[in-house]
Amino acid sequence: MHALQTATAGKTSVQILPVDVYGPNVNATTFDVANGIIRAVNGGATIVNLSLGSDTGSQFLRSVITDVTGRQIAVFGAAGNTPVTTPFYPAAYPEVIAVTAANQPGQLANYANRGSFVDMMAPGNSIVYLCGQPWLVTGTSAASAYAAGLAAGIAETRGVSTTTAAKSVENTLTFTPPK
Image (tube, rainbow, N blue to C red; front, side, top):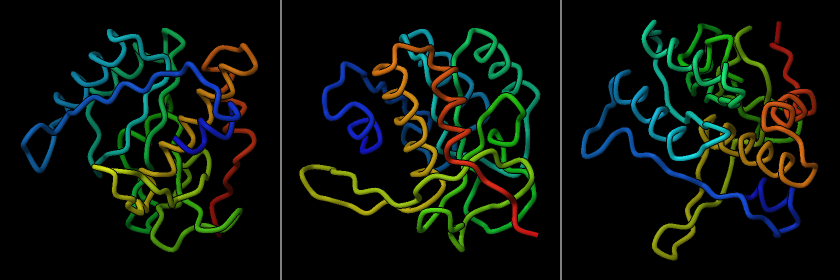
């Protein structure tokens, strides 16, 4: 939300459509995630943020994401929070813009995944409000949400497609994996 407000100087018509893929469960299946993506797109989403993931890929989930990105809908994904270089899905799919976290501009957070599948780095800390209370959210999920919000704001203020805006964000918040 902060990135969206920053990109639009607080004047935005962008709407956020939260989709709960977990329900009352601790975990979500790839079917739940795929269904959530379809619900978001059917609800009018032009950018999808996937602040979730696992070490295992799914051809079914990838086919849904491939279909969505083929419709010129940008998809951002959290790169994971176990400072490793191994792929984290769905962020590791080539169709997804994989976002890792910085704890300072240009400085990779010590908890953030850093593999060659990562496309960009965004701030990994965000303040969110729940029931009027501020909470600090930390991780690549916050970074992915930040990047998606920034892309939405750029698309709105510049009058460009969300995929063009997403590419602009990716080119601005670059990431080079450490050696």
